[in-house]
Image (tube, rainbow, N blue to C red):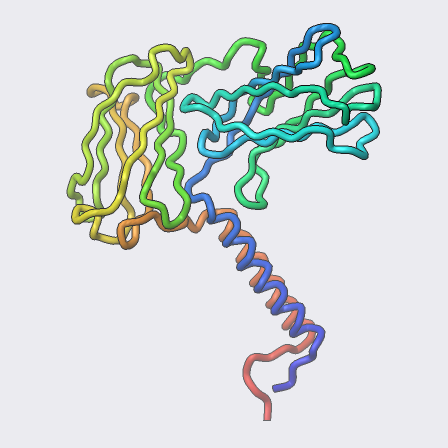
Length: 286
């Protein structure tokens, strides 16, 4: 073969990059990123900062990191798990590490493996180891957690069906503006009903969130393919919504999403362009 080492290496690197990118994107099957909000409250002369917030990704822990005003030192770290509604809260205690005076940056982050989902930053002023009176918030939801919450859309919606690839647990999350019971059905690729369940949305949640876990596996899940999850309240079409989940050997398989397909397409186009320019050929020349 008449391969040039430099162009060959570049082509192989593009293929490897596309495969790595697709794998990292597929680790959390069916995740849909929508936003997070955080707030920080502290009293004048206190040694405690109360941090709370809300996220639309309930299955991923929120990690906090506090850096000094100079940005040179990490003075505190913490991690919390959101509840079923996506709410979370923690307290940050000022320690002897907080030696600098000024504004400390609190970073809240959610990530899957090395892929960041949401990242927000807020600042709190600390002088001589004590807080200044603080009430601040930041949001990627379009409205701060201290302000009015967004209204719930009319009807029932499944927001996400989350599961790690290879897991036998699927977590269904959604919203509804009706307080009637929700019927949940899972239909196999051959149209058999494999799960039927009923539950109520959280009556104490003005946003109408609901979360339900489904366990896969067993003789009813023996067929490989896309299973349809249907949530419904009554007969009104606005209160019926469905989503598909891929199952193989009774466990969840990763979804080959649009972003992954785009990455692969860019890699292929790049390889073709490099090949054309360098006369790189797959067929041996004699």
